[in-house]
Length: 454
Image (tube, rainbow, N blue to C red; front, side, top):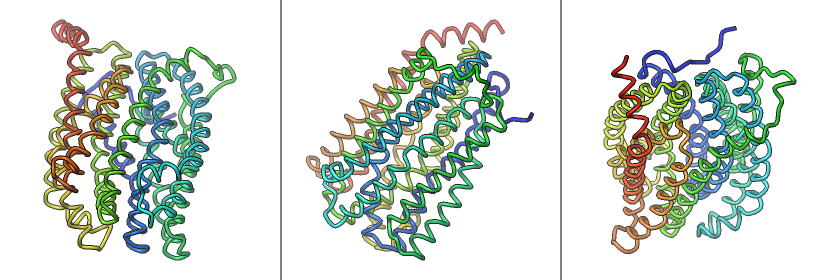
């Protein structure tokens, strides 16, 4: 039976990284189209105030998604290492045990999220004219937490086996459904941002169920016998040991984003709308970097499991080169096209002007953003659980302090919102690179020995 499974322990590292990253990047872009479709349709057909209400909620669902999806990512790292070591029984065992965790955790957090959303939005100083709509939208989105987590779990498992194509196919289909439902519920039935949220949840449900069914029918690692259903606390511990630091890292980033959102909210609806527009655009900018990181994580995990340390180091070098080329392209695009991009979301001139300014500022720091993702991919593939948590702490401290300093004490005003994002990337990227140099010192020595003896 033909499958999309890829063994990355052989062949060109550059080719593997690009061929894996391209479908994953397209898939992640389509995943962001969920948010873009909601934002464009709401901004164009409901208005800037409704658009701002969607933006004011973004960090809350991200927080709860992060708490759940880090565990799935941890399971993916373990699977990639077992696959690289050709331990097929452990691959299946890890998939089963990760699935169990991913059924329990999201259900719990969806209940918590629904209950505390009003409190969180008030803590964030959400403008009173946006509060009611923001609560309603966020609660509907959080109900879909289970579906998002199931899809991300199955995607993590497939990508750990080198298959980045199958998740893409289902994302494309569900994104098309989401856009159609957005149009029907928001434009035709005038359900406002609640209609946009409902369209997203339905689409996520279809994506998760479809991907799981297809995996079971076509991928041999998802075709289980009775003996495979072995709940192993040791395996659960391995998944949780890597997954919890990733969850905490993502959650800390989400919490820090909430801190930034609180500062933005204090500047009023125009600033919130501009920040929402730049966030939506930069979510797309993050995708090529994020998929390169994911590609390097899978490549590193498989080769580390196979004890091919020379290929781990080669993968890092090739990934860094790809990142440099990508950064140059993205930076140029943002400098030249910022105004046109923000205009896709809103028509109000003050919002467009402020958002375009923000994009031009943050694009100057894309090199640091790229370094974060390159190093994070390698270290995650090596199973460095400490770094994920530590890097998250660095970022959250930066996001809590630097925006406040720049907007309130250094006189930058609204400009400081976007400038502080770039400074935090520099801080996080620098610590990531230092961690790579210290953590991989012995591995790089072994890699040099392998290269000289080959």
